[in-house]
Image (cartoon, rainbow, N blue to C red; front, side):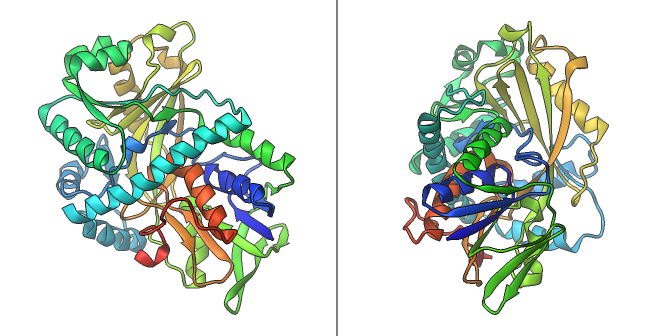
Amino acid sequence: MHVVVLGAGVIGTTAAYYLLQNGHQVSIIDRQPMAAQETSFANGGQISACHATPWATPETPWQSLKWLGREDAPLLFRLRFDPQLFAWGLRFLRNCGPDRTRQNIEKSLRLAIYSRDCIKELRRNLGLEYDNLSKGILHICRDEKEMNKVSQSSEIMKQFGLKRHVVNARECLEIEPALQAAAHQIIGGSFSPDDESGDAQKFTTELAKICRNMGAVFHYNTSIHSIEKSGSAIDHIRTDSGEVRGDCYLLCLGSFSPLLTTPLGIKLPIYPCKGYSITIDTSGHESHAPSVSLIDDSVKMVYSRLGNRLRAAGTAELDGYSLRMSHRRQQLIANKAFDLFPQCGKREDITYWSGLRPVTPDSAPVLGPTKYDNLYLNTGHGTLGWTMSCGSGKAIADLISGKTPEISLGGLNVDRF
């Protein structure tokens, strides 16, 4: 069967690999000149099952009200007339209850743990190198309120199969000695020893080369205009380079997915959430930069060591499809990074980036079939696209191939909305 994959980010490329493994002919369409040039380009670098707590929790509405109008807020709403955001926000609020929060943790964690196992297997089988480190993820806390939330979250996640345990301040410094300069700020945290980190862009470009060697055809520099239907099936993809036809179609276009599915009568509640990252050259400062990946929830930031670089990423900005970067928010991330690691590199060597993360109201992806016989979805992974990429790719490839996926996809299909 010929499967056409829409999107060559980490989500589309991993799905393409597993489809090829299952014996399919695969074509991939992307508007960029190569793989992983948008959301996958400079993300936080974490394979973080421990970060599967949804955005929608009982505390979130009150936190959001406190952050309104603050340019330095971890979650920033750019106020404007936006019906898409309004509809998304209502669904989001419905997911903020404690029962929904627990359900959403379970389904995201189910996929995240499976995906983490898949990437380990993929790395062993293919010998991929992408500045990966298998040293776990340390979640640090600065006050008792945060510590209580992390303790509760750890207990819930352990019930769903994640190895995550609470650690005190001394243990935080033993796990990551580079935190010594900020030791007075840290009261404890949690540690997830099986989580990982690595460069998603390097991983994806290497895997794309492997896919090409396996026979995949990449249509780069090709913009998708529409998905054309015929009756109960998809007929072809209309692009600026002509029509692309296949037997089956897999949508992996992140934040841009709703723009193509809405004309088909499939309403995806996916909203683009702009995230920022900085990359610091740590050459000559290696001992002062962390080697264990970190989460600092007090400022909604993550840190990952990628070879001789330190990636710091965070903040969430709801501003439509704009990639305009706020100088103040750029500096916020830089200030927080150098607050924790004052000697990790030089400020003048920072590279700034922003990208759109496709967020659903329940923080879980949309994975599975649609009302069209030959159209499947693998999108809406939010901040956990890198974490969930391999598991999503393998599961959807199995589904397309008529196999039963190795994990349940319950609660992940589009019908839940």
